[in-house]
Length: 195
Image 1 (tube, rainbow, N blue to C red):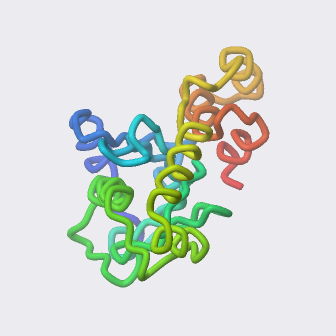
Image 2: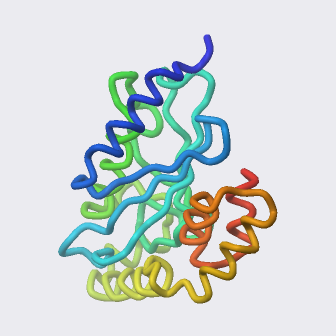
């Protein structure tokens, strides 16, 4: 059964219409199967003020199988791998339902940032710190947010955007990929090429 393109397009429109939710989504290239989601760090958390990018891949079986999601932005969180951005969240695995949407998944990630589940960790080191020294965890998470999730720190963005556009990519794609990669051109190219 091929992916329900009409449904995916509707989900994207719903996200675009609801800017107040704090989540957005950008299609990568010509396929609706590769996207980059963006979510704002929740208030009153160490992630406040940060902008976090998530790689999203849809299987041909979507919405009957969950989207594959991985944080591109580095995050210090018990349920997100500090090494590769893998996410431990039940609705992205066995608790997924076709009634859920991309927006639901992105909002669930935002909620996960607010409410870590250290007893079911993706990153055991972060979970140990969270359980053993909450103030130290919060300080480290805030440092990571300041270092990796503040897009205004992307230096020389315009020149880098121009270089990527000259390689044949759309300007908006280049901007999103560079922001997601915190200005690292090589990582931005990997994102654009779907590596």
